[in-house]
Image (cartoon, rainbow, N blue to C red):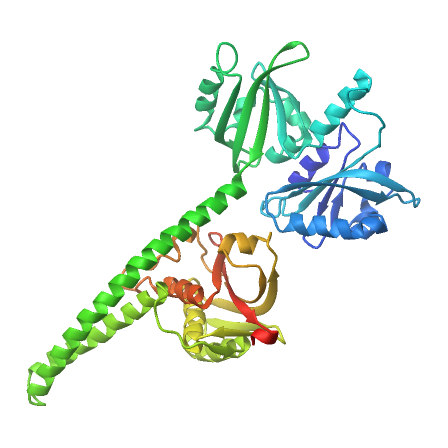
Length: 497
């Protein structure tokens, strides 16, 4: 059992909770040992099974909706209630807490926790004290927010969501010598200083946004609220923690989009003015050429001037493409046809060490795009993939369709409207990129190549063409793990065609 799975299993040591690890398809990859106690199933018997094995038939659709929502939101935690089916055929009403950990390399799973729920009559206020305490504990332990109680620098209580957030078991967290080791070393002193202001005569609550470290040493950005309280008759600090990593990534993407938009406007204005200057220089150079004899020594210099003008005009065309101010001639296209055409051309240019593989879906809807510009997009991506693999390797080009739902990651990441899109991916096994490079990859004149190799306008041109066409592009990459560029183009179907 992998270490991270073992830590998840430890969450069930002191409770009857069931912890399940599901793959993106909703199949059980691992089931906790309490599964037999709750639903009568062996954990080994469930591995590879779908939820239909233990979800009551009347709640199957609700489960699928819950799983789809959870799958589309990396890092999110969601909650629902539904009926599960015991192996003996009886139904059990359970609380379901799900967390999307597909974006954590050490886990890469959907983690689902099941807890049996028993309906109770009466209101909370009219219930006996023991019953009220049990209900409050149930509310806290089922909370999607991480909740801690801090006493004398140590943790006196942790709910399961808090343990899952940091990658520890509850027992491991309670055994820590100091709870402050959970905070990032650069934020730890700040937190301790601020906590000295908490309580009488200071503030009753303290709201901080800081960094913490998980057990695998990864960093998580959190919002924390510290509140002066008491626990078991002694002074304590109630701490609620919310993972804001996903929100911060969206904010970073928004800032990057605004930055690119500003650069785009600047580039478009410069390109137009520069084109006017080039036209004047070309006109005068051609006049000089016409006034000279064909064999005049200065004809060589005139030809060099005209060649430099042509190269400069090419740069301005790329800037106009990035700024989305070029004139397009869109037509209805079969994207598979464009891929095959560019692939044939690229195969002659790539050399023997690099080869292009096509994985094309049949029956793709058409897209509305300028054919020359779409070929330029794909050729730039293929050349970029080739340059990322100095030792050679495959460049995989794939096409398919994707229905973007309002809550899916691609909509949040690209700003596209929900709907049906034709998707094209270009994948390589090259040197990859770190986060800092990925953040600037579509900026004009940004390049990781050596000086003199390229203008740094290739991917910025791709970005501009796709935006002007109504599409978008995303990139996924890690150092030494290759890169995957995914292009989205609106599908044209039915009456719109």
